[in-house]
Image 1 (cartoon, rainbow, N blue to C red):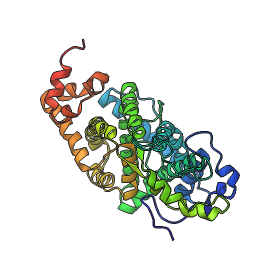
Image 2 (cartoon, one colour):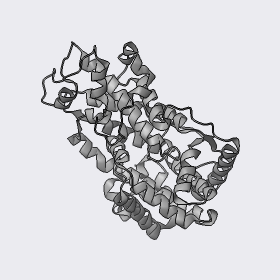
Image 3 (cartoon, one colour):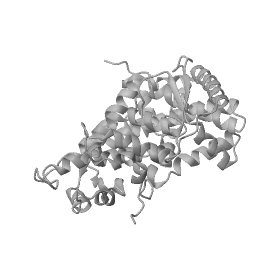
Image 4 (tube, rainbow, N blue to C red):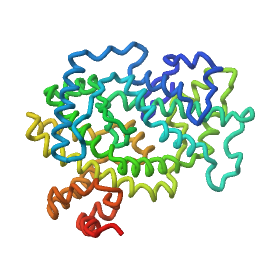
Length: 386
């Protein structure tokens, strides 16, 4: 029996139709086998049974709440125009959309993991049966990508449980099954929770949909995931006994998909992390400020909801931490506290008018040093751009 990994235990292969067709299993035109990724994500999101459709009344209610949230966030921040729409989906559909939205990140991650480590011979990847390493790479990354996204789908409320930009749009995607389940588990008023989630998603969208913010984060995250360097020994240990005539040997090798990455953080990635953390700390600190400004007067049980949801975001499981690590996101309590301190420091010195400049242009995004010294940020942006 395989040891459960951070993304869950058990052997999912019996639930994946493609595993019954070895010819299709090893056909891929890129660094990620997207059909495997799709099947794996949907299997982990909802299992093998069809997912129930979202109830029409539930859909209508969430669409109304997004309009309310959008109008209030637009009034408070000036970052949206109050025309956002809601798209209410099930967990399987969320997983499919997220795979599409994360395509570039996942393909760059796959390419980075396929790179030959510095100092290794060019044939460092075991050459079983010719180019078997090249054949298995997309399959492994298909399982890996599907595992990560399927795991996230089990608990995601909307698009921005992770502060990763989505393609530009005027739509907020919500997953009512997860929202309602959390309300039931924590005995929270479900309508209040729905409005809280809508406000949080709209506030994130207002920032992350800004073209220069999206471009900066996409650049940093793409560079980060491209910087992984694999350990050749991990591939050898995992696939040394693989027999292409025996499907069960592949099942054994892939029973814990995330363990085959054998990835280590490179010096390049360590240089990028402070820059990623600076932007994400500013985003999360600003969103929390908007939530407090709008939510306290709009959501009846805002205080208790915020306490529960702040605990939820920092008490992530091993699987969530694993995904965050792969994307270069460190979202523990110190990171949220850092963002809150930055926003508080700006407000104390320059008020809401000063804070509003945060998302003005790429130039006004804070550096790592400025997140810890908001006075330096205010001083720098007070000078006109040359």
